Image (cartoon, rainbow, N blue to C red; front, side, top):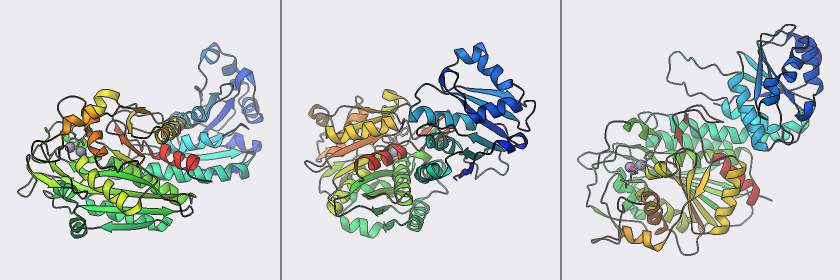
Length: 486
Ligand code: BES
Ligand code: MN
Ligand code: ZN
């Protein structure tokens, strides 16, 4: 659900009667704009009292100072933002998000200053204007409606279209990730992706018989204990020339019980988010389509459910991947890599992409290592990964590179098959990445993002309430814009 902000010309004469919340900006070194000065006059000097206070002086750049129910104005609150000397895009985005959480009731009216990258404030506000309350009969979340008052409505409009497309992608991802697994079955997931044709994507759904004839034994083994059919969904956005596409591949385990290697009951409900990688791929594809990105990008997601039943795969089973390599399934709970192995191979055989980024809620071990602040980044290509890390940093999405190496690959050698699906107790995230690397062709630039810690969180972040974050959508959209277009 995206709340599109309304952009309107700044009209100082109607501020007095404005309801809801007003947000104004105080520039570094006491610089004020005419909006702030007008609000101060109407409020009989209360704004200046804040600006002159010790608390304001000591407060960090980016802080938001609230005057509740001020004299002389109809609003519930005035929010005064302390702007730093040269705020970065991330500073501005964070301020926008903070305005949403500080707003009191009804409308949030942002009286935009004349500064560079001002649309980032609105983007931050839009990102934070999110709640997942579809399944509550009475919702207690109150989200403000955003109004942007600006002297440069035309200039803002262009940036705003791109920002809206990005936020729509992030919110689409969050909705998918937050959705419970009885609703977001593999079939429902595929249906929601098929609906993206509305934005101009070409969407194909590969069903089980086709996956079987392609030889996707690794992926199909994971889903064989579930009533929900396994699927691979392919989304094409060909907005560029005739160059090879970038491929985005996502793990879409709609629920991960662990299978016969059953997970403990406590916290198992969190595994509704085990399709987070597929969710991010879907969100990026939606954004690229909506903003008509001038690049070729194809998104591929493997949709399965990992359930234990009479038909479920057993520990010790040996499956044959589409590549032809055989895998000894030591632990049915290490299922994500089995799904990705076949989708990665299919992506390369079908599209011969210029590079591949895969995303997966792959290992609990990455949470132990990096917590919820950074996704684990693995790559076989220094330039490709440098581009991604730059894009992630500019988007303010935490990403930290992890090592790969032959010694780790040794750990997944199998007695009975070409490899086994788990290493030992150590370096769990790295052995998982090494497993994936076995399904990447020589010289194919590849990045693996382990998002088990960042896809969904238990406390709110700068840009999202608790629950699904949409981590990765902005970094990847930014990477495409920066390195693949124009
Ligand atoms: N989906 C899980 C990983 C996960 C854990 C995601 C916590 C989000 C939060 C994955 O399929 C899994 O079960 N991994 C196992 C691998 C192990 C059996 C080698 C794990 O991390 O314990
Ligand atoms: Mn698992
Ligand atoms: Zn899983």
